[in-house]
Length: 585
Image (cartoon, helix red, strand yellow):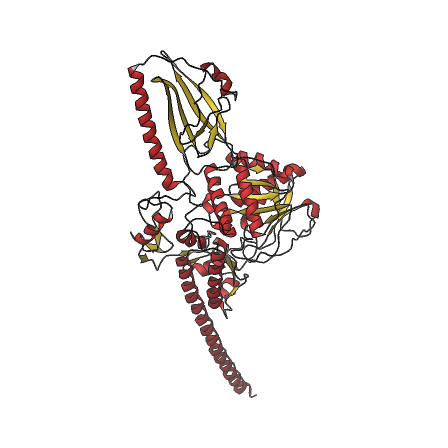
């Protein structure tokens, strides 16, 4: 991290400037930005002007020994610089002190310097006020201006009838699923409730109630605007990548779900890109494209990646291949069932463990995984899918570094603001888990995003199990407290092939997902149980109506079958009697 300051020395005829590089601790990220212009004068003549952007550390000038705070308090004689030092300092050289002779008073220089001071102080005050309100992790002393996103979102929820939000980039309510109207006050009973998409919206109410401190950030325009966000972080790295690595390692230690010592960390745009990059790296390191396998039901994108590029991998459904010539993806807990099946190829040279759901918001953490490749994502951990941040813990450094070619070829690196948001979220989550979160908006001590979500998800599963109790037409096959319902359709219309499981649910205005065999299994559908509260309530209502309707149909069908069977038997007896009369039997 480098901060650049400009030093100018005015003479009678010219002004020369040199640049000074001020290194900051590489893992420190700014929480406050102050722009200060200092005017140094001797005998009423302008000697130097210094403009600086920084947080609030004390900077020490190596050449002159002067120490200055970022608020401009002068602790020793300000440094004076020779314009001949320009070339040296542009390349990291030292700045040399130079004594200047007093110069005669020039009235226009005095006016210019006074104007410069006024502009600088005005800018400093404006920037200070803005950042006191919006800087991450800082709370404003003013009670008049909102100091967190929560101060904006709560009135927004009220204005949208609790069924929508006005986001900072908009001026109108954006309604939640199946609500409509200017203030989202009307429930659209004819809408199709979408529980197919994998958004983990169950977390959102937590943010709207609690999370407004360290996880709410305002990223300034100057923050890391160039290419170069590191995507592979060895254990000894520095910079933003190292800050993320430290936060991620602390998180896994706090949760106890994965070993991190000795692992490189690969970052990418979500777990999907992480796994694709790993498949590329495996092919590069092993010198061949291996068959890719995953036990059904599996995330459908796995098959797509296996068929995407034959020089990287090729999809296979076979279970009896040479174990050294296959790459297997093992998802724990599985999507969508929520169980922990062993690898089909336990001796495979390359096994990628997809652990995106292995967090204490939905499952009990009983094992600290120590596999060669382990993948995680922010979207399934905290619900921040749009941030597009995933990571892998990779023991083999060669594989970790080979992912760079793929990632840079696709996206030129991660979004720095997105990665900074991920860092802020993970740090704040660590503070919740350790009971050190200082913000008044954080949950009570001893609670966290994980514990609050786990309680809510458990309550939802109580409701879901009641809805599915005694069902024979639609059988719930998922483990309790998992994100999804994996539902088997046992109705005749699906079993006969007249319609898919997805179509059976669509008839009752429920949009599920993967109900056409996309996960490698026919006759099932995946329903998302981690939606917003209002969406979940609508889903429960429609499932109840659907199951009652099918139960009534089933009973009516049985009654019709019995009546038809009775009539058929009577007709047979009557026909036999008539035939007997004709034959004389």
